[in-house]
Amino acid sequence: MSVRTIKTVVFMGSAKNITPPWGGDSRLGDRILSWVKNVLSTRKETLGSDSIIHDVYVVDPLDVFAPNGALSGFTGAEMRAPTFFMKPDELPPATKELGEKIRQADCYLIVSPEYNHTIPPALSSVMGHFSGSYYKCKPSGIVTYSPSPFAGMRAAMAIQIMCHELGCLPVSKLCGIPNVGDLFEPDGKPKDEENRLLKQLPELLTQLEWMAVAMANQREKTGTF
Image (cartoon, rainbow, N blue to C red; front, side, top):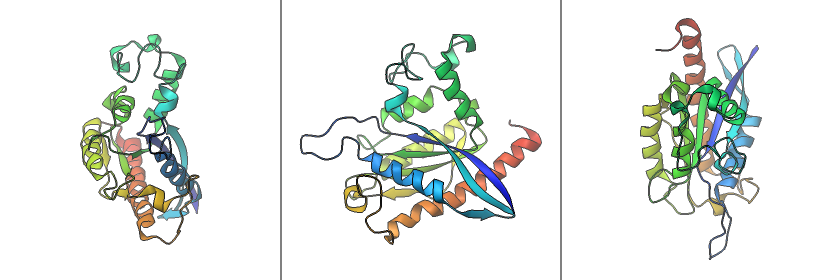
């Protein structure tokens, strides 16, 4: 059996870095991000005659918008300078490196809460700094979460539309995690490995992997449109 490596870029949707007055995590999504990364790294899946593994690269707005980050200085979270409005030789090396990671990806996995019932601005800014030519003809998967019973599903609906317009078509399976503090330890370890809600992510990844391989094969044959 041959090994098929899928280059998977994980976009973290939250840039929150403050503990709320009532206490708790400064960014609850770190629990979900850690869980997602662990599932990707330990996943054993076959697709036809291929054994699938993921080469994971995480894009975190707390990093890319930080001083000296890939999207700081010449631009920022408010997107003063989308990269597609600039000449390539005007872009800092870190920005070029981030762009190439996004361009070379086989698929995208978005991990996000909902802010004001929609997409967090940090997520739309990070992804929107790069044009649709970076994303097109590739699939995406959406994982949302919340401290409440709603699991960020209203954001998931909006993220689906954003991904469609960028050209990274979302798979139909969604993963929505409610009541994060009840389900996960601070390090991202599930409190109950058998909880049925955890089965959503492997099911999403099965669809994402199938689409990633199929679309990569077609890009290799014909290029993109």
